[in-house]
Length: 129
Image (cartoon, rainbow, N blue to C red):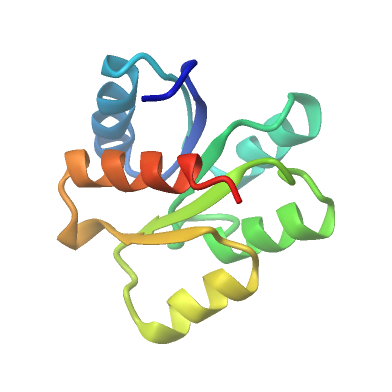
């Protein structure tokens, strides 16, 4: 059991999914900030203390999830955050690229219900090595 609630950033251009995941995490007592564009999350990361975890979609208008990961890595914006890619892109090459860019986890949306996304995210946050 977490000793305190976690802070999470959700980044996805799909409003329905953003709301669905946000409800799941908030119901468990966590603080969630939702972003529908990469530029918004980068701006927040430059200004605010890094969250415990960032759930990041890959395919989005404007900056892609990979581009966001590259900026986060280059500018050291989320050194203490667990970054989890949450995408419908499940090709091995995408998973390898996400890992290469520093992602701590990769969840394929199409094959995970919200409670699985929640439990996998908690597992990754709590596996602080």
